[in-house]
Amino acid sequence: MVVAAVAPMMRTDEELVARSKTGDTESFNQLVKRWERPIFALAYRTLGREEDARDVTQETFLRAFRALAGFKGDAKFSSWLYRIALNLCRDWMRKERRAPMVAVPEGVEVEDLAAAQGPTETVEDLAARAELSREVARAMAHLPEEQRQAIILKEYHGLTFQEIADLMRCPLSTVKTRVYQGLSTLRKQLGAQMTPRRES
Amino acid sequence: MIHIADDHDALLDYLYEEGDPAERLKIATHLQECAACSVAVLEFQNVRGMLGNWKSPAGELGFRIVQDSEQLPSASLEQQARGRWSWGWAPASRARGFAQAAAAAVLFVAGMAVSQLNVDYSNGGVRLSWGQDLPSANVRNASITLPPEKGNAPAGAPSREEIERQILERLGPNASPVETEQLFQRVRAMIDQSEQRQQRELALRLSQFSREVDTQHQADVLRIQQDFGQQQEALEYLVRTSGGVK
Image (cartoon, rainbow over all chains, first blue to last red; front, side, top):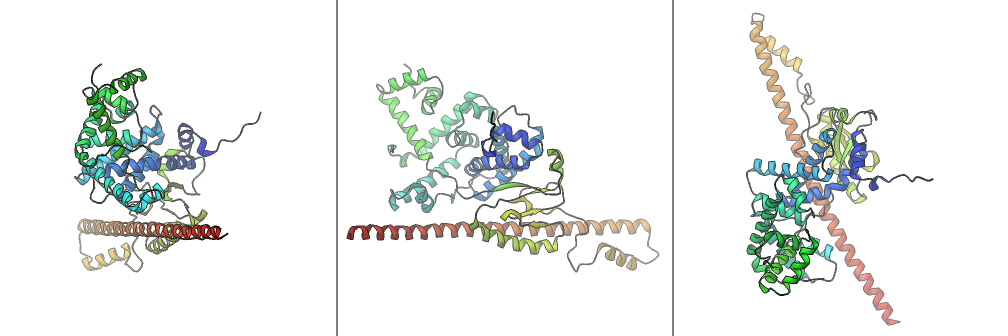
């Protein structure tokens, strides 16, 4: 019987966590590599500033590393990370005593969109999309914190309502209410921009 | 059938394809007959479509835990967390090397003033570390947060012993030992505060510099990509036109 060595990237989160607990920092770095982008995206959309999101992302993994010995695996590792990141975002906003930054949303420049979309869209289309992205960022920033976080977790991270409820430590019905109310507010605020959804 | 425009749970389950599939099928059938519900669903779908335009920045992150080689491989996680380790940059690409080298050069100069700072260029990346407990990570790339260390005065500054000797000389032989000790304690506290302030300022400056280098690097990469794209288009045009002549 031949047993192939499992490549680090093929290992599950649980396996990497177990190895990290024995002192294998490379395994923890695999977890960082796997989850830094989603955590950064979550922090960025919650806080609205790339630099703050980087700080929160780093702090999230730092705290996770320090607390890993106490992680019992009752929840998924990713859920645990999301919770740390959400708490840090909340602390950051309270410390700064302000709403998320939205004046100049980053990552929505025409060049970025062009790189993502390929050559099929005109410059006018790309500019319109960049403007739309800013509008969305502005509208999201005006939502109450709980509604914004619930929508971010649902729309951009694909969590189920139940997973969000576990993460935010609130009943399932509360999460659905937050998402519904948030989407309703966005529908009103973005109403002028609405056009029938184009299916590619 | 109840209108899903009035049933938020059902509306959300339908929009996000959660819940009972049989219920969703009923809703789909209902939507074919009910204009009000169809409009409501369409509007929520449009909102979701617009949300999809909000992208997060695509820049590279590359956070990484770096374990000092002196640490025993068999050390437990708890021991490591108390020991020597730091965050560093992963060796991401050759293009990033220049920015790293520039940052490392500045950090090296800073390291001359702060004896606990180590800079390591191994494996094509840059690694920074200190022989201290875990630093606060409020500054980006936490490795540039410098912990206070007694006796870490900059080169050229008088040592603590020298300061204490001068104080004793000024007080003279008749000074009360208690007052002298209190004075020493105040002076030591002032020196500690001064050193900590200097280290915080240094960490802040290094952090700012690192960010500027990063931003410049991203702009350079973007420009290079754009130039490359234009050249590629020109090349394709030449290939097409030469093919047309044949």
